[in-house]
Image (cartoon, rainbow, N blue to C red):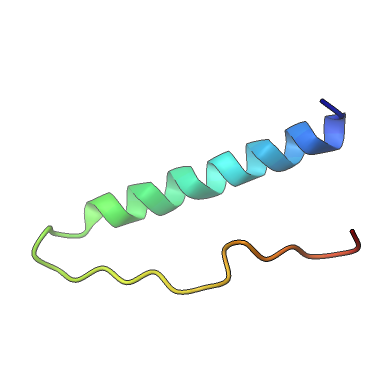
Amino acid sequence: MPQQKRKQKGKKDIFYYYLEKAYNVCPSYDMKIILGDINAKAGRE
């Protein structure tokens, strides 16, 4: 796997780790809504 792909995967894993951590801090009786274009890609392809 190319180095850049590994870096991107690492950043994605970190993002989802912190997202899940923030999600789990909220009480279970609260309604949780996550908005955003999480699948968006920036830059050229």
